[in-house]
Image (cartoon, rainbow, N blue to C red; front, side, top):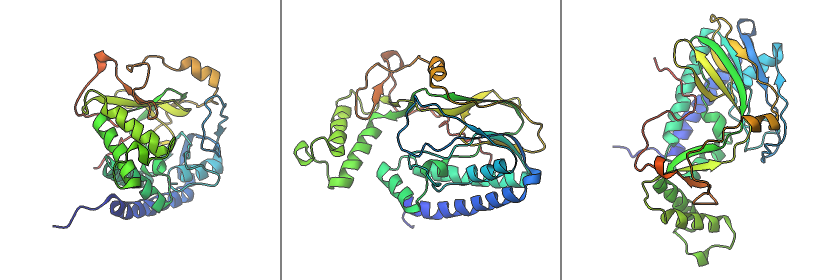
Length: 321
């Protein structure tokens, strides 16, 4: 029996396949502009820097005609960084597009590849994931995000969201992440005397010690980071339950579908966004691990052990048939 493949080997297999199929889709979109219906498409300009200031307004650009076709081809297929794009930002162009069935089927195929790669990366140490993206010189976020495909689009409401970003973890998984980062640098878990004061390794070691002082390695906690302006949409697709999801890329559907009712995305206004931001939280007020922004849940909502099966929130509405 051959040994299991490493994530680097899996990436070497899947990413070139994905790139080739995406290039075919981009070519088809550009060649099929008379058979594509752009019901809405908005370009979000790059900020050209890593830092995000949620107090800065954002002016969107509504695209039409050939500009819209060119952007559709780019945002649905680009996994490499574009000109002026910071490594900490992604290409964003939300919208709603009717496509020929041939292009839709090819998008379904690339979605399956993206999900396969995402699942292979789950639980992989951060250092290995970073190494993979350095090798392939692409955006991990753009590579992994699937294109949301609708079957019977009825209503799409776009809006800006600045709520905090949460990710649930088990304490044991965070401990392992810290240990892996230290072992990658030192070859072992260092003592305080071995690390440079106020270095990244100092913060990692301190975080590790704080995590180990929590009551149980099986406790479920949350990493909570201040929200930056991101686009979401409330979607009604046929007779399924309406849902809310991220909307950095266009929703696509068969061009035979009638144009859905669309509430357009507007410019981001920090003052208005702050008024609409929800205040309710299930977390305690202060982090238990300051540097990593790790929060415990309030006692009434505290849980232990594996997470219940649930959607990862990545627009994984993919059909394999």
